[in-house]
Image 1: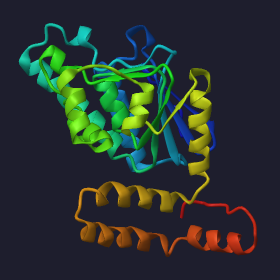
Image 2 (image 1 turned 60 degrees about the vertical axis):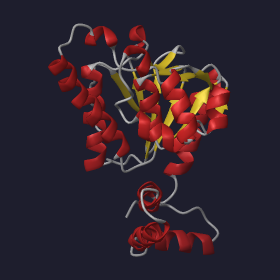
Image 3 (image 1 turned 180 degrees about the vertical axis):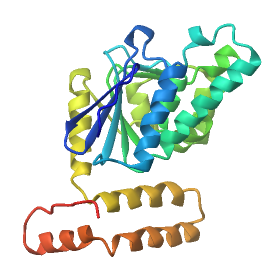
Length: 265
């Protein structure tokens, strides 16, 4: 990927085909302000246009204290209703850009993920967290509700009843509860988290890129449909993999007892 300078994000390729994005406002617990939200939009929307060799995205936060403390309330203090709404349109677009990312997105949640930070985590395809991570949807404590997808993505991850408890109460919950409830896939020691997440990202990135993209589409969009419509969409996604060179390479490599080399076409 071409190197682009961001003021609130660190972007790197620690391994071939793996893009690592680090929220970089540690002095504000990596809370997103207008600038960070716009930079996330720019980065994820560019991936929707052209992945530039990236096959997996990993999102984490700078430091060991916080993944993301949500929207920057210091920036929002004193905003008029109109200014608040205008800024929130940017936050909404930020979440949509992540949800619409064509390649797998994985979270390495390295600390606090409160409010919009929890929503940011829930918008990813799946997440891992450190054993010191804490989550909360705190919006009802300041007079609003989750407005960056939280009522939808969190409910899909943990179920309606648990999501209601989390959102209505605003109470924090830890890494083990997040894992037990289905928000987090696995919990790792803080010092091992990023290593473990990058390891699974590398495994995914070695699989056929077209197949992985189509599987992501089939799962995500299929869950919004009836089972019969979901099956029909699955076959559409499946059929897009048949004419690819990667499909032929995968079958040939299996029969030749070698590791396939996928090109993404």
